Image (cartoon, rainbow, N blue to C red; front, side):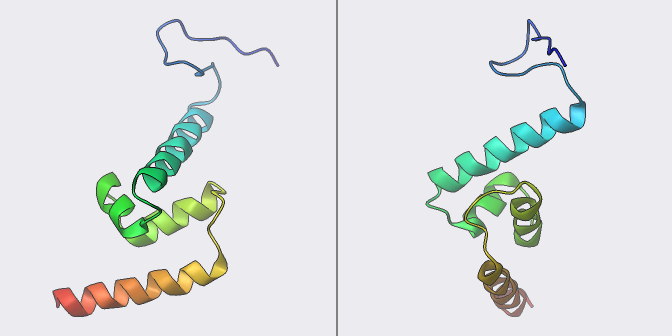
Length: 87
């Protein structure tokens, strides 16, 4: 399948499904945010304006390396800490 490059699009963006383009952009954005914030997922979630659980879900869905099963437990612990601090 031949891809058409959009003239007004950022470098690397080619014609394709909107879903595919959004997924590619979202993945790159999250990876960059993780690098800039020293892999601190709490900071990344806050920076992106999403919950910590949403960030972990996106890490799984977007197959971002470094997400491991034990991080689920870390996420649950952090959310428990947040709920006890807030409430």
